[in-house]
Length: 209
Image (cartoon, rainbow, N blue to C red):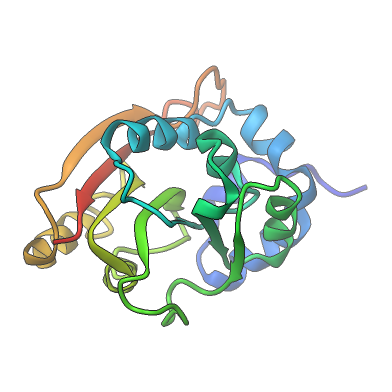
C-alpha cells in the first residue's frame, strides 16, 4: 500500500528532480491529500489579490508552478486568458481536466523558457516560491516574458523571503518593476499540522515597467 503523502513531503524537497519524483506519485490525490485536507488558502488569496490589482489589459496570464490548476479554478476566467506552466507532467495532466487553461507548458523554471519576450500580461503563482521549489532568480526570466505594465501576483513563503534572497532580488530588479506591495496571509486555514499549519506567505505584487 502506497504511503499517503503529506505536508512533510512537500517541505522536504531539495531539487527539481525531487519535485518531479514526488508529484509523479502524488498528482492523482494532491487536491484531496494536500489542498482540501490542509485547507490550502494560497490559490484563493492569489485570485483575490489578482482581482484587486488587475485590469483588462493584464492578459494573457501565466500560472507559474500551476500544479493541478488550483489558481485556474479560483480565478474562474475564460480559459483563453490563462496558460499553465509546471515541471510535473502528471500534475499538469490533472490541470488539463479542469478546462481552466488555454495552453499547458511542461518546463523547468530554473532554465530558460521557450516563450517570446513581452508575451504575457500577468504572472500569478502560489506555492512555487517555497522550500525546495524555485528561487528568486526565476524572476528575471518571468519579467522577460511579461509585457511592460504586466502584473505580478505571487506568494513567497514568509520564512524564505529574506533567507532565500527574495528581498535582495527585488532590490536588484527595482528599476524593472514598480514599487512592490506586500500582503502577509495564512497559507492554510483550519490546519492542525504542528510544524506547518500556521505557516504564512507573503503575497508580492508589482508591475513590470
